[in-house]
Length: 193
Image (cartoon, rainbow, N blue to C red; front, side, top):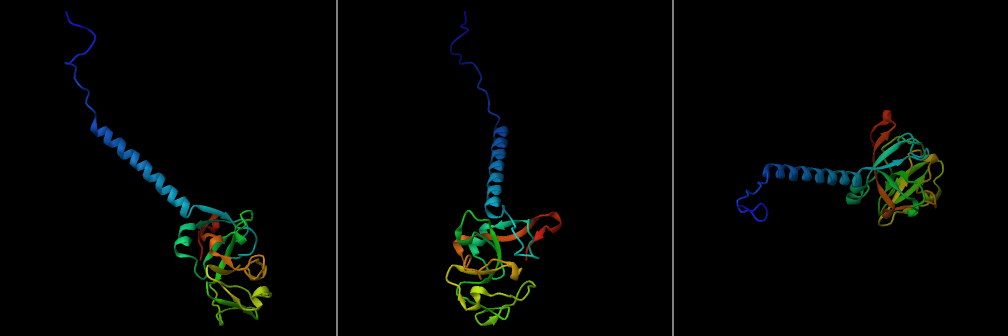
């Protein structure tokens, strides 16, 4: 009489479907890669900011939404004429400011007769701007220190920028990134210059 329970050495082992296992591993790898790429995108350019006020008009208008490139700014630093996004004096309770970089570390900035001078030479504007009516702090020569930037709004006579004591030169550590693309409203969608 045969036993119906216990060990049975004649039982066949179940075979593992290696094709299925490989397919599952590839699928998991693709999911992890997609998540990693999405995180990289969000950390570098996925940061969205709303424009507050008319200080960057006509380049940016009040209420528009822009994307900010954080990684590029941290790796290469802002250049002259770049649009940067920063917190004034590092105040995390403030809204983000968006301004154009005019003066780089080591530059001497002065505004005379409505014109911006960098190191004694008239600044060649990248965008069309009106003459500055009130130079404020920049009436006297300002030296941009190491790790600082002198910024102005494109709407020069309606912008709180580096000419004001409340803003002054922007420290590199307070810069969040470079503004690079308008994403809203759709009719203004496009890269910034």
